[in-house]
Length: 353
Image (cartoon, rainbow, N blue to C red; front, side):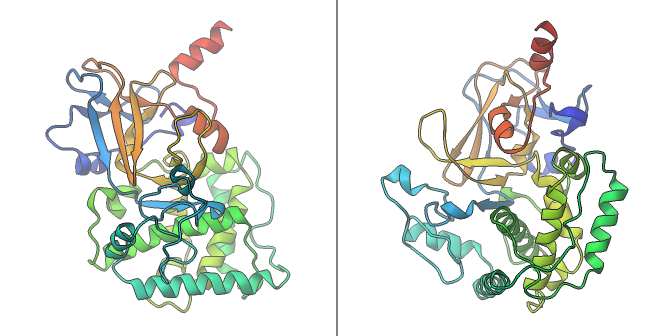
């Protein structure tokens, strides 16, 4: 997509093919400005639905909203005139559900509810234990500069993997707790796939997720403090999952966590409330693998719309053959991901000013 050094670009090879069907009126092509995009192969009328992604590969709801946002359909209680949702499940921690139907659908989608309950218990227990003790760890707290190289980042992760961190040595802040839950959602989906007990549907496979653009280096350069936060999340998860044999291998090294977080930045969509106003509340974020192949432009011809848990993509005008299909990320990314647009329109306007 149109971010410096192709920050927003993707590499849709097998991934695009896995989601494409013979009826999709577009294909992936390499662009002259870096990365790849989706281009119309025939005329597409205004209002046509291009893709409907029914399930994100990974997601997280911000901590303050976990009792107010349905863990299944992302319905916001305030949109329904309520303060919160009150349907719970012992395996879902602080998460809530808007209806018994959503609770049942969520439970059906979890291949191992007892395992999920153990994870929730382990994560909450470690967080409470750590919060009662002063943090003594210095791992992940050293400064990272905007000129960091991949060698610098690799060295920091290698040091983290060697670190012998004990319970009580780490206290995560709210942002790090949210990142932890995002990574856990990806780990659980991968574990389900590895166990052959989960229908991945159009959320995609782990291999498809890995084909999204790896933005680790750019993310660390734009936001140097994020590396230390990610390292603390890794160390926390390694401790929390140590006694859960099924999941221990997923956090013994930083490989999986790094892969997830490298694709989170600039591939994620915000989960917003559904009020028809300009200042919608961002409730969390999610990665919809198939949806990540629409590049950004400040003059988009595609709009995205969340319908429950599903993310849909529609044309906003007639699109000619050969034209790139783009959505607008700019407001979301300026607010949440330090994004400054460098699409053709913005470059032209800056040159004229």
